[in-house]
Image (tube, rainbow over all chains, first blue to last red; front, side, top):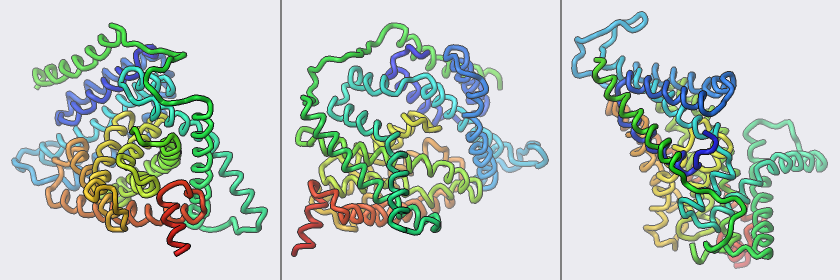
Length: 245
Length: 192
């Protein structure tokens, strides 16, 4: 799983996610969510505990979706067709819709985790340059910007110390604290970015396409197989749940 | 892309990184809002997710900044480990297009407050159309959906348009933007 070309993986996940957006059948979605989970856990060598920890926020999100869809659902076409849902008797259509939307959240979540947990970040950007013909100027710019991320926490401590040294009030409300920190943080990020850009150019970075790469990425046949199997599985889920009903 | 300085790109990326974090911080807020008052809770704070488009476009003032900065913010979200995954990049592109449209209409000449608010509104509309298909709003009551759209447009105009403008101008005041169009106009205004 970790060896699959990042661009192909991202493409597959995106196509699957778009396809899922057009599905309204809870059974299909449930099946596909299960399949995605199985692929991630079996082929991705992910710790099961860690995986479910990541899924936890989605459970809350899905529950919110379920409740709100039940409450704010459009008037069903056949209100007389009802079914038992937990303790209430509700129109079947509403229940189906609500379940589908809630399971869809999980469907997205598992697809995303499939990508996020098994992909190296830098590899993804480099593969975007090499396979998707993203401009190296832009891509390396992004990588440079991404490197600021760990520096930002340092910067925040610096700003806080500076405020303390100058006797600024630090025990303020959350809102004023946001104002206190956002602007200095952004200003220092911009300064750093300018310096980095100058440094990159002074070391001969032109951002042209005909450059060489230390780490090169290629699309192999296994990548195509992965994409094909993932999309076919979705098709199978649709067919299977149709025959099931 | 040809007439972009390296500086523009890295600064844009840096802004996108900072706002990518802001976006991530607001995801749990979104979950809470949604849990409390239903899907419309998201729309109230949705303008937050367009901020980088407006701020970056206002500072750098080049064609494509709104679109690309939003896209990078989306990529950064994925890189940090957004719980929503690569689909976020696509959502970001859609929002970026909406914001970019407002600047394209003025041919990148005007960065008046109404244009900035228009960018927020544009992003609100495109993101809503995208959300309509992706989030399954079709299952909701049509009048509720219209209400969601109105709330999101207001949020786009106020949060991303007005607050985005305020952030950019506060930055110009610090003097860090002297080599960017916004910093230059700020200096001229101060001198003149």
